[in-house]
Image 1 (cartoon, rainbow, N blue to C red):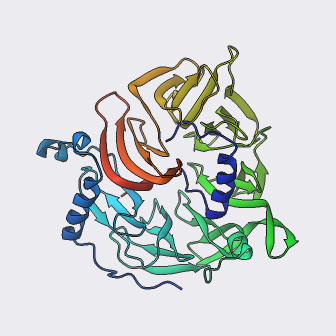
Image 2 (image 1 turned 90 degrees about the vertical axis):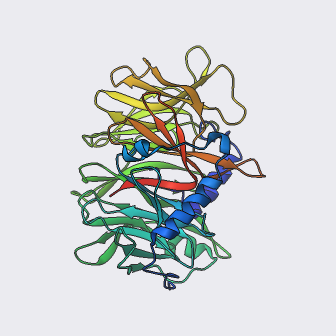
Length: 410
């Protein structure tokens, strides 16, 4: 999954959106019922979720289909179907839904430990852990009371959870990049946010750090470094406890992934304006950039890419090329290209997609996309319809009408 944009970063993103066309992707209260994850509730909610999908496109699932387990793992996501954003799990059969959290305040983010199978989630400026069945709720980090101040948003509010592959470290943002040691039960801030106090309670962001995603071997952590109008990317090295910004001559953004060997960072952008569209490869150790798809091709056309994913000797990604400067969202096509020649693309599906987020199956056989829900202001709310998109060209299908920030889990 691509991490949700933190509230402070969303302000930055909105300012960018005003100048750039969006391309390619259209003290905690106890839970209401901490032990309630009854199948009757799940069944009821499943009907409610499915109700948001037009009848004409709703999937018809036979018993044989259900037994086939269409998904490689259960998928976890946030949904506001119950009235406020909470954490849900969709089983591998792609049918059975279960609500896992019942918080009085919205759940803002979550991460799943690949070792202990615990879930950490963020609500009311606190990090809570539960087992995968929703039980054994425990508070591990308390960020303090919520406040509507610049000081709170830049130094006290918690954002962006990311659990390391070995399950020993939970990265998050609070006043900078923070690392929580599961063994010690303590946190430390390793990169401190930098702001410019101009008076009147106004703190201009100069460097704000948010964990993005861990390398597969857990040796490095990709970090979003945000500033007043924009952002870039950097890498925190766990062994040397050092941070290095990627060597980019532009605002490195917006969809990222690691190579399986943890040596390469893929970055793709479907936006144009202050943010350049295109596709890049970065060396994770040196930070050196290699441009693979230029924003504007030699023939004057424009290239857009999103959700790159390396599998085997190929790169899967979504791509579009337009003959003129685009106006509004540009649908993208799912393609495959050899790592040695990214421009030798083969379309994997006939249709095009507007997606806010995408979650690849580990083997690249399918991708779960979030189709955005348009708002009255013409922008896209981050949540949307969760759609199964097979890479082999077989029929796609909606799975849930309200989903945000999907992730694989047990």
